[in-house]
Amino acid sequence: MKKTSALAVVLALAFMVVSIIPSQAHAGESSWKNKFDKQINKLELKLGQFRNNNQNSTDDKNDNGDKGNKNGENENEHGNRNHNDKGTTTPPFLGALRISNIKVVKATTTATISWSTGTSTYGEVRYGSAKPISTTTSILQSDGTFGTLHSVTLSNLSADTIYYYKISARDTSGNVRDSGQRQFHTNRVTSTVGDTIAPKIVYSATFQTMATSSRLIWFTDEPTTARVWLSTTTPVNTSIVPTLSFTDLTYFRNIVFNNLATSTTYYYTIFSTDASNNSTTLNGGTFTTLAI
Picture 1: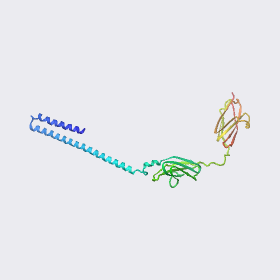
Picture 2: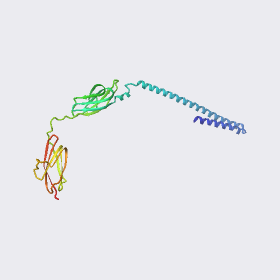
Picture 3: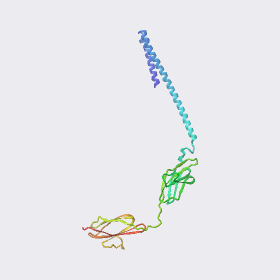
């Protein structure tokens, strides 16, 4: 566009110069010559600019071409260099070292950690009860195999303790990748002595007592089953079939006695038994129904 515009301007000026000659022929020679010289100077100036623009355009194209060649050379050189430098010690290969399928099977004093890798590697686990894991406060244990499936058993652990660990995978070229810090909690020691402590009924109450019904609730300090005897006489006879019976283990009971006599005093006994067959009894509970 610049080249075409400059050429149009030059042609227009040339036309103006030519048109001046006949129109000024009758004028004074000196005046006409001065105007003609000015137009010629303008024409020469525009021609010079036109040449410079053409030259700059050509130089720009050459420069761009040279830059393109240089960029091409750089890309070729870069591509060749990357191709030649590729090997098992470059970061792209580390994707094959990805540690996955991490599982922990724990007990009270042992834990087995297993994992897999995308390529054959040596594996090891660094672990300890201090956080974060460091070389001075942790233990290093190798799985002793070269492959994709790995397993390490940690022993002599403390029961009911949180341990932190980190898995590392290393290939034959020395590339190393780790799992980041993880943790597991060893199991509590299970008592070998059976439960001999009876449960406790820590709270009981009757409410919403009406003419023919009343609600009874109670809490125990551990899950228990329950039997309830209801009587209009005291002491309550617990040798007969209970009024209500529940075999599920729970801390809380909420029951309703129905079809009661009006204006009558009732007595009840609660019998609760835990999972180890230890039982407790609550006697002396009482309520009176309303008159109609």
